[in-house]
Amino acid sequence: MGLLIASLAAGCSTKTTPEAAPPVEEQVAENLVPDDAEALEPEIEATPEVAPDEDLTQTEQAVLNQRFGLLFDLEPHENDEVELFFTYYNHKARKTMERWLKRSQPYLPYVRRVFTQYGLPQDLVLLPFVESGYNVRAYSWAGAGGMWQFMRGTGRLYGLKADWWIDERRDPYKATDAAARHLRDLHDKFGDWYLALAAYNAGEGKISRALKQAKCDDFFELTEKNRKLSRRNRLKRETRHYVPKFIAISKIFQNLDTLGFEPVSWDMEIEIVPVKVPGGTDLLALARAGGMTWKEFHDMNPAFRRQVSPPHMEATAYLPSDKADKMIAYLSEPGAQPYAGYIRYRVRSGDSWWVISRRYGVPINVLKSVNNTRSNILRPGQHVMVPGHGSKRTVTASASSSTAKTRAIAAKRGNYVVRSGDNLWSIARSFNTTVATLKRSNGLRSNRLKVGQKLYIPNSSSAATKQAVKDAGKVKTELVHYKVRRGDNLYSISRKFGVKVSDLCHWNSISAKTTIYAGQKLKVYVQ
Image (cartoon, rainbow, N blue to C red):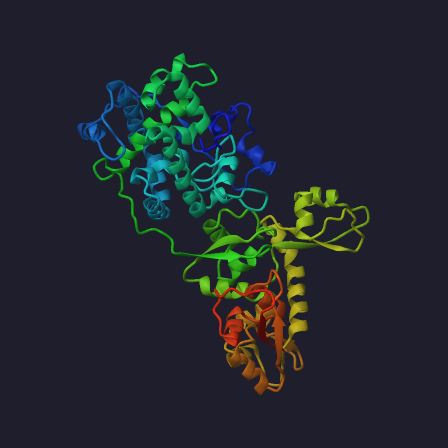
């Protein structure tokens, strides 16, 4: 299943045989697919046989005979294949079909909107049932991934990145847009939706060669002549069954009530806010900023393979709408990040990049990328950052170094000195923040404070907070006229001076969407 680029000889179903390809478990071990990959359910690739006691009821037969959508009058021998899968998913695999329907509910509304925007037939929103049972974590034996089962090559053609850090084939939103464009391109080439679907499964090149040898332009005629084709051009059983299976599932979906299935709810879509996160963002800390567990965050963002976003690129994170404000605010406060997704490793005598790579299961090129180095030389006592894998061991191992790092940052940026009578609650109230934010920003594990202790107050660049600190007689601000350099943006400048993007905009009477240019001067108030 899945897709392949046109220049390849065949789709993922014919690129290699199931016997020759490593199982999903081995591919996980070799970092070819994420460690939470799920194998395709057997009902996806099943070749059903109708049992003697599986005759269709009159109601089921009436549904089977209906014509709508992409369907047309099928010849009796063509309808036999459709009836085979229609019976299978209504009877033997009924519980599986029910599970797929429930799993699809959060995504169906979005898929329908995207396909409508591209002018595609609505029936095609059902294709992920045929591909993966609407499972965003599904991987085939050949390495096709996500609910649309993209192969890496085809995914790359349509802008989906897949590497050690991220696999956007598992991003239900980006992958849906890519699938819509790919299906549109296939239909433009073949001029027929059934042939486009067959090409989606077997590959554009395979179907083109088969049609040319068979001298026809119809899917069902092609399957009739399949035995006469050369071995190289002959369609595999999976491809021959692909279109009948799609038609059968379409008939079931259009008649769920009539066939006794629970209707699909179109109100289960999760309200999300897509946000661009800079390279190397600590995703675990981002999740915690929104009061989410890693599992909750990862369920909404299955494309991420690590607890840290790819350091070499900007990535998209999907945040729940009711928690997005806190999480976006967290992204603008880099000093408050605990970096829990990394291990800070001290190089020992005899260590090398290869030794560390083997020890933590992280490729050498990734280790170098994280540490911004091309050098092969490591010195004893030197510290290097090692990306975490999302395990409890990694988080525990990094917790103490994360707290120490946060305290060190807070000590350098401390803008309030604790006075007699202060406590975290009174300080939080004075500066319009929360006790939890103060503790997280300063690496505090308890509520105890000492007179003379320095605290870092987040958001202290805002006018109200700045004035409050001034009133305490502890902070002075200085106006800096910053000359914008090539490659700068508002976010990078805000990080450089430890201020908020919103304050930069306010001081310079611009919006966050305003384009800044090299040589432009911006006003920045720093402490």
